[in-house]
Image (tube, rainbow, N blue to C red; front, side, top):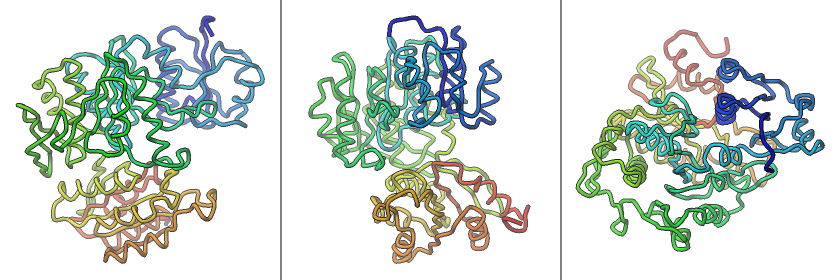
Length: 470
């Protein structure tokens, strides 16, 4: 365990975080190689520009040079030829979170942002606030903040801002990723049931968050949404300082005089009036968390507001992809009923008086299952028109576990909302193009690429192509 590491091989190097870590280690003088099953731009260009050789597909021969350390990505499972070669050859290996812990986070001031919803927005806004205050933080974010132009950066600053995912670490480590991040400050935005493929119940997720809370040192801080009842059992047992934020009167940091406008949100906290270029009450809560963490880092309120003023948002978070034929097409990553509901409510504020389409791809491991059968219907019914695509990989689930899309559509229609279940992006594009009218807003909800449906729809609405598939 203590022998020097000079060469490192990344299995699954095409992931954004893996590639960023590999490039940072290469810059520090390590000999880096990597592999993936398929690699293409922009990640192939990124790695090539940094002189990192990448092998595709996976093969045991990629490890013939016997690197000092092998980093195995979260998507890799037993049966992968390189994972099997690592085990057979007794090579030293670790997960990406373990690598981050030992090579990038240890000795730094780690700010870990967690929660079922809002992690990426909150982490991006916090990282930008520290950057704007000239603290030059390292960061690792599950999205692309427009101000920072990348999802990961590693600097020599004492500050490290990281999005703390509760998903499991690797096939050999089923603990949540965030337990590896050596937190000085933890933000807990909220907590709901999610990741039904690895967590059997809400108490199991609460246990994961409890394990994170016990890692916060006595000179650290746990910042938590005091309005969320699912966090209360964790706060009651936390062995570290705790401060709550929220809208309720019992919070240590309470937002009042909230203004939800089409282009911004504003709230008062203590003597200071804050304004953010983001819409919706959930973004007020995200900003509250950032104010609390930034103040703890010694950043004054005027500098926090200056960072808010210049924040440009995050790709795939209420992201306007364009307007065509008078129809505005929006991209959003939401894939949990609560996130869908809050995003649709925020869109109602942002695009007041306009017809709203919700185009949803049930793709995540949770939404493919029937655990949110009723909740999905209730959330999507907040739109004026709903289109649901074919449920991804439904045949891989047991019949009793599967989301029932026909029932989902019936439940939405019973709320007097027109809804359709269509097989793929071309069919959805034709359906929307036939019924949309100028002034409509079509929001695509997916945590995947969804067959480039956004561009397809914009081109079809512009009449650039007569119909999809021709």
